[in-house]
Length: 243
Image 1 (cartoon, rainbow, N blue to C red):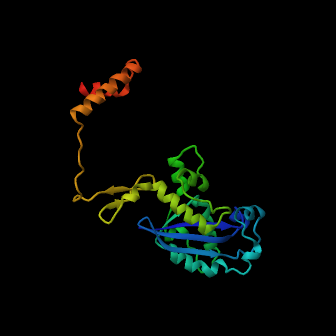
Image 2: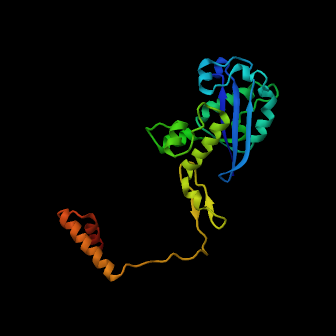
Image 3: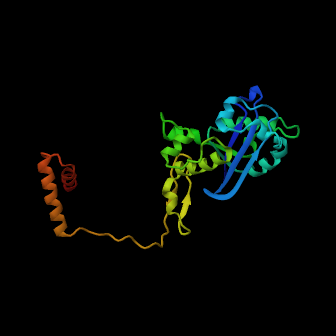
């Protein structure tokens, strides 16, 4: 399975006001593993960056002045995302801007979802953590993903961070147990990765407590039951099992 974790930066918040894409960053995953391939382009928006947007990403009009137009990088972007599953945080925003940019091209009116599927990690996070903050920074704290380099927003850096968050949020450390002898299967964006161990693996050793160990355990439970005035949970469980 090929996935592209994608992020964009823009001149402002609304396409209706003529705001444009100024940076696109994407990293490739194949079978949930980074391949090292990435896409990163700055784009001349042919308009001014709003002050509010500038305070978020720090990309100035002067910096963008000599960058290519979106029309110049559109084919390269389409080639990179074609057929992939796009992983985007707050996907509605980024897809809206990319569709707006593609729609401005005379030779193409294609929409993002016509060339790839889209997964919104914000929707996944809200499902898994209802009522909590689910910004990318909040998810980094929750899943212990290092975002110390993220002083300002940047499309490629945010895509790299989101890739780590997405993998933790949808599979976590179960992937650490995957080897060439294991079969893994991603079972959906809200669930954990299943790891099936090889049938030829050595059997686990079963260690049974000795009589002396059982007696010592019983004496410990007696003492705990006495101190808790009959409320020892382990003693109650033992009695329930005996019945």
